[in-house]
Length: 168
Image (cartoon, rainbow, N blue to C red):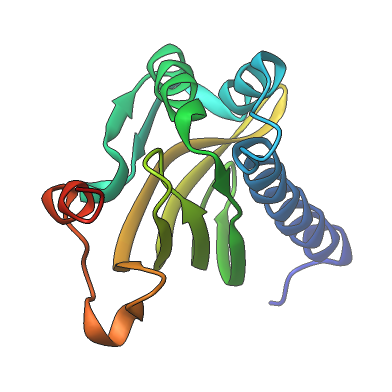
C-alpha cells in the first residue's frame, strides 16, 4: 500500500528542512569579504551533531566533533573570499535518518590571494534531533581544485606546493 497523505507531507517537510540546513551551512560558511564573524562560527557548529564528522578531503582537512568543527572553521577565517553554489540535491529519508548528495561549485580566494575553482560532491548524513535535522557527517569529494587563471582543463588539482611557488 502507498504512503498516507501524512507520511508524504512529512517527507516533503523533512526534505525542505534538510535543504534549509544545507543553505544555512553555505550561508554561515561563505564570505570572507567581510570576514566570518564569531557568531557564524557558533552557528555553523550548531548545524552538526556533537559527534559529527566534517571531512573536506585533501583540500580542506578533517574534524571530528562539533567543537573541532568550530575550531576548523575558525582557522578558515584567513580565506578572504569563498562562496558555495550547491545544486542537484538527492535527499533520501528513512525515518529519523537521511542522506544527501549535492554538487558544488566553490569559487574562492586563498590566504595568499590566489583565485581558485573547486568543484565536487558533498556526501552527507543527517539525523533528526529534538532541535531538528542536523548533519552527522559531511564528506566533500573534490573533482577539481584549480587556479582560476589556468582553469580545470589545464590543471585539475592544485597542490599546496604549487600555490606557494606561484607567489614567489
